[in-house]
Image 1 (cartoon, one colour):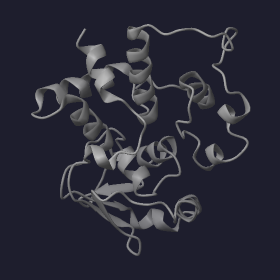
Image 2 (cartoon, helix red, strand yellow):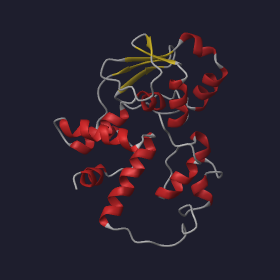
Image 3 (tube, helix red, strand yellow):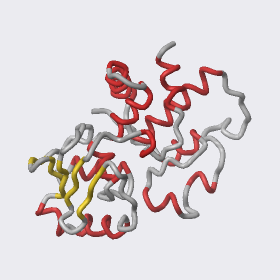
Image 4 (cartoon, one colour):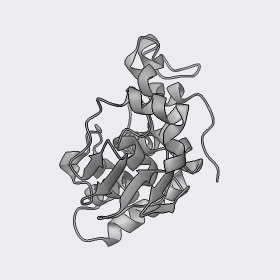
Length: 208
């Protein structure tokens, strides 16, 4: 599957805010957007007034980049959200939150979403006792996510867990730090998602 392979700090600079794509580095003075608070490229420092469409597009791009999802898959998630009962924008965020790579990140099993995605792809996690190496796998209520027994002794995993030890786990997930096992209690509610997104703009964009 195709994926973005460029410098991730450019994505933060393009959106004008931190997307926390590089883990702990984003909290230091080495963060790209802290050093250069303007968009990348030749005309990045020029001021440009966005149209209504431009504002909606930027919000969609921001959401895509937070979760590391390409356009075709993001559109698929929107269509899924639109078919569900309830508020489409909130349904969309709940679906994105239920991706296995995002759940691993929320649990502190990855310092950033890209790192969690890599660890999932390398087969370090199980869902309901079965190995799952697909980052886009959607978990549901009562699913049990765990770090594989063999992976718990990995220096990489140990280092990640040490970095994220103080991270707060959202209330829709129940984590046992002793066994490195978690249970999905329910779908993520809008109040559980701390990202500065205006999902109604995304709905308006796709409803054009």
